[in-house]
Length: 298
Ligand code: CP
Image (cartoon, rainbow, N blue to C red; front, side, top):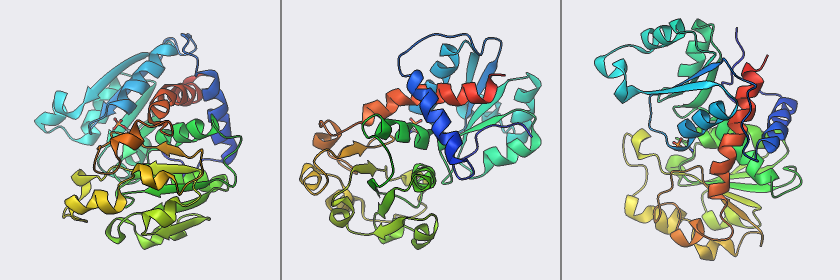
């Protein structure tokens, strides 16, 4: 089976470290030709700004050709199935397919049926591996090590592939993790997902002494019924300046984006000195270059 990147869960710690080290070398923008002659197809069944664009830029910076296809602009909108779409694209002989899909496990299904390496760019509520890698790169740009850090992940945990990939990654590096949100959005089994994970329903308790606060978007598109009254969400789980005083003085505030100002995070916090949200975006290109190179350079 071709080796792509389907998730963080099965990655060895050494492999993660190698990607993060290589990504650091790509942080200074440069054009290379190590992937000249390769073709990267980005197939996005869900909306994306950051992930799709940064995969395109990453492929181009490494000398590869890159094309992007969205569900609304392709024959998917005419009823073509996932398998038929993928077989059609595979017939054009891409070197790798980067795929985002609303169904958890869709990239794993395809990886079993195609000879092309598949890179998971977010599958349903399951995993978003390159997001966790770029988040780790962003923390390590400002801290010597992940080991022993206290990281609070706050928001709609139940529907968050970002939370799952980050929990898998950070737990492999000995991080003290607290996940927090309303009970309807924090599945109790998360505490058994990995070593070092605790649950809190109180944002102040979760943030106390945190080195890193990762805020998550409330994913209304994945909620079939309202899990928490919209008007009260910000009052109970929105991150405001007053909360930062409970955390370490040099706390990093992260968010995978897109952010909803005034719902899960205030503008004052999102635009504050403590926010590294745009640094995360910047690292998206470097990390995706490292991932593409690892999978395609041979
Ligand atoms: N963080 C993230 O996946 O953003 P996009 O949906 O814009 O790609």
